[in-house]
Figure (cartoon, rainbow, N blue to C red):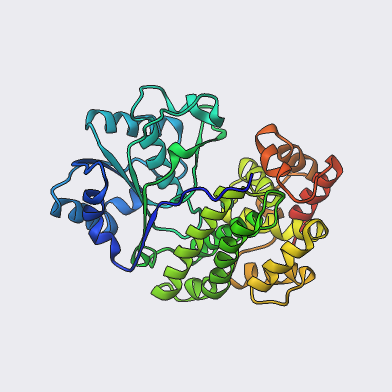
Length: 381
Ligand SMILES: [Zn+2]
């Protein structure tokens, strides 16, 4: 299916968040009562203060949920949704990294019913049809959650679960680079590389099509241009804004065609150990590229060109490796995953919940391939 799905309205500009009350007022529902979902780390600092002040200026009655520290659990999402119901919220604002935005989207989607979010994991049941409108304000440049129709959480068993569907689309994204300047370099690097892998996989996998490639290539060009500066000079607003736009575009691109084998590896690494998702995806692409190239040479050649290299698929592994190292991400994993064998990682990769990513890869994989890819990731140095 070759469809460019609808994209939220996207506002871009430093200090743009100070107008979020006006953004709410401009929604067709003209909501007066709002639930603010914000990362706990940001809630009591300058970012939380700015958002609350902006909402006070426009006299919005705001309930605050800042119970998120780390990855969201189903129980946390249910608690936030219960708050949305008791506050009779008419809209949700999500401020933070991809996890906070995912919580905001899920809360908005389920607030109209009373079931636990777990009921909707892996689309086991359809989401309520009329979600509350959501405005997403990302404070990292990586997941692109503000433009995807996907949201991730941990289920009661502690396993990664996700839901997807148009009900999880944000109504508006506000890309404000002034909110990302305090992000530490290692997180800037890991989230930025995640955005790169989203863009690369979306325009090289089996679902790719030209109308979407254009978006992915734009994201790749922006990342190649801005990520090193965003890591090196945290206060560089031009680089920070370039990365916010890039991760947003990469989110649009994966929303249309999905990811591929590098994300299969990343999800498996994330389940086995505490490897940051962005770094895991970067290492997954780095390890799998030599294996993938032959299946989609033209597409990978276009990526190499978008990264500033020659239009040659063979140049891509070197370009990706250099960027990962240039932004300071460690390539070797073995010390962090003691005792994890290629067999163990390959078995995790082969789990049914990872099948969609594996199947959308341009090159079909055998059991032997998964084992070889797992070994390549674990022995990288
Ligand atoms: Zn990712």
